[in-house]
Amino acid sequence: MISKNYIGAGLIAIAVVLFWALALPLYDGVSDLDAAIKEREDLLQSRNAIITNIKNLNKEYQKRIPEIAKLSAIVPSKKSVAEVLSAIDNVSFKNGVQLFSSAIIGQKTSDTAANPYNLLSLEMNLSGNYPGLTSFLRSLERNLRLMDIASIDTAAGSGNTSTLNFVIKGNAYYLK
Image 1: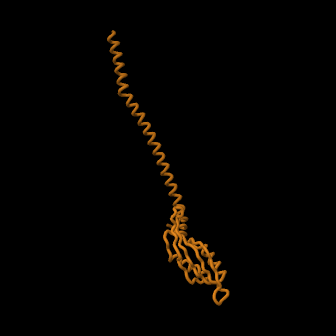
Image 2: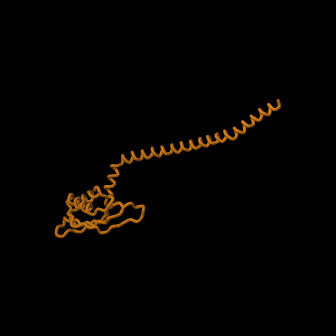
Image 3: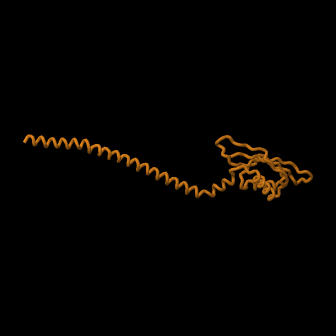
């Protein structure tokens, strides 16, 4: 009878040792897999959030394409001297001011990263009356191309007192 008790206790001891040796490592492996699955789910959620943000940004960009096109027309991506001079000639003709000469007097490239554009310095010699000059300046202000006026010098025209000669210096902008 004593040997039966030893056999039963031995079988129970063997079962505990086998459980400890085989089942417990499997349980630890499952726990590690649960942690890995949770980590992967978090990663998947963050990627889905990023994809959703990218889609929203793309929709916003698509809505603003007309505004971007207007901005690229105002400050073009390249220096176009012919376009600037043609626009000035067209504006002067429409406003009754005669353009005698126009010249590019300098080009300033900005080295700083804060300025995303470069300057094209212009000088225009015009002849006309004062209302024509103000109309010319208003038209330049409303022109599609971004320009600013730095100075205006005025002198009386030769012979005719109602005619004035103007020297206008300004800048046109283009992207780097």
